[in-house]
Length: 434
Ligand SMILES: Nc1nc2c(ncn2[C@@H]2O[C@H](COP(=O)(O)OP(=O)(O)O)[C@@H](O)[C@H]2O)c(=O)[nH]1
Ligand SMILES: [Mg+2]
Image (cartoon, rainbow, N blue to C red; front, top):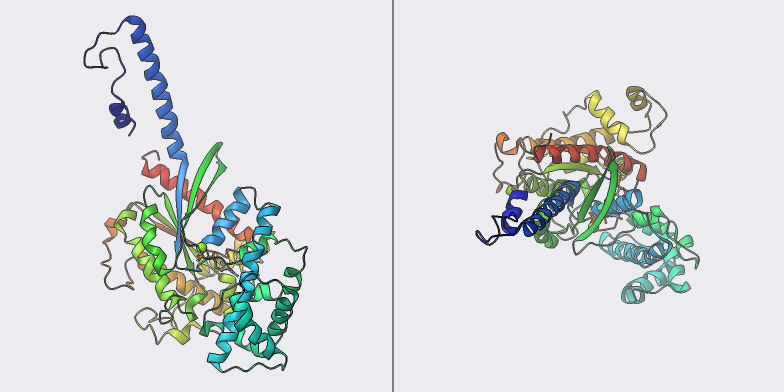
């Protein structure tokens, strides 16, 4: 590349410039100095290029891509200023409004009645006034919100949220309306991480991370995940070093917001298959984030089961019942699960001490992980129009997986550290330096 750029600039040596034009010794000296400067500059740029590692976050809508970008800002940039925190309040209020509107709308469809007499006026307020007036923060608005959320009918509707579209952070914010409505409210990091705002254009952040005495510069691109947004993805494929693919492990009982006939998990596997087999991404390694393991655990605790969806997709889940989790697979999952005892030094004892994790959570997470890894090995194809490539086609890239809880900064910090080493190694290998 350096050679090519030099060629474009033309040789700067005495005999080079202008096709044999004679240069005096003084001019030749200047030309040599310019040449040296230029070489230095190009070397510098070449090194800069080596250090500017471009990462791309991909995955279906609501899988957690933007939450990982926010974590990068918290971990690697200066986090959120007071002014930036205040900026987020309008999105949080929008989340509260949207959650209640979704639930009140779904109660009608699911035939769940309101339990408290006074909630009826609050439901009417939501459907009429609040649905139109997006920026309402009056006491009247907040009182109606609190009243509705306290209604046992709304709570029942919340428990059936897999049957309609509800944002993941609904309960988190509705439980703290009292705090949010206060005039002194400033969102915490956790509030910012939980807040949902749809990504429609390509977002980009840059940060430096010290690594082995060097400052490694990362550029991270976050894109919209909904079906309509995916045509923009190819715009950012060029010179990507690694893809962080977000797969939501908790979505097995949900359908897509943009297509309520389609399973979110199947869509996520299908998009992953397309990314893994995409010819433009052939040399690009994938870091698969098996995300939302906390929500997966909550769902299993509520009695939701992957088995309930086996009949709908017999080709994808043929062997769930008979699948067995190895002790290594269990350890990998348990070690990543939030709330572990960091101080226990031995990996095995640390993992066996986590008796709080339901074995069905582990089994489901590991089974979903294996669906993705089967795609990597060419043993599972979701989209029959994609022709999986032979093993040799994939020899210049790989896929590594991590269980993640994107709203947990400690978990993400650990995962990103592991990723960084892998990304740098892969990048150096690709440039023939390792
Ligand atoms: N509890 C929990 N919520 C998550 C997790 N990952 C993402 N979310 C929430 O899921 C919602 C969608 O996440 P977002 O990053 O906007 O998804 P994107 O569409 O892929 O960018 C947000 O409300 C996030 O706070 C997770 O691991 N656990
Ligand atoms: Mg997003």
